[in-house]
Image (tube, rainbow, N blue to C red; front, side, top):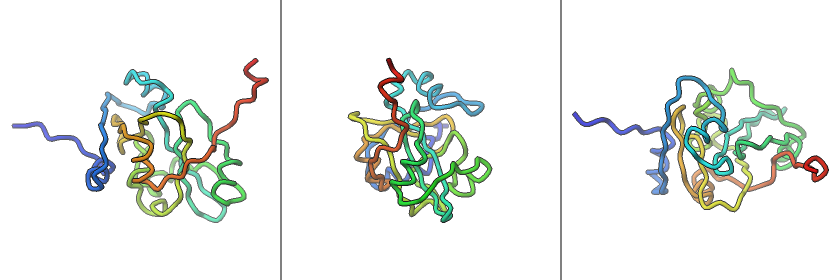
Length: 168
């Protein structure tokens, strides 16, 4: 009997839209962060992105996809989406809002209230990026342009800036 190919909702959406991608799987019995995932996969940290969901006082949800080693600047992010302030979505609400679980959350194919929101990410000069594939143990590699096509992402700087003095 042939082994059934593993497909997530995100993968089905990419296939339906004829967007080329590859997927990478890894063993995962419990939540691990993006840095650990990149290390498990032997991928440069700069190519692996994490998906963060925020909520505004207006009760609108906003999704930000940023490099795994970066930190979301909530003030910059709020300005970019035209809100006064944003808070991280409480983890207990993640599945109800997005349809995905922690460690498997992706901007591709989010359900419910997030489906119409504007997604923001940081643009880097990479030809490919790696994002969650829609379940733990699964990552998807695609071009930033294809990611933008499938999610409606708008590339904006929304991460905490490192000051030159801090480096010296």
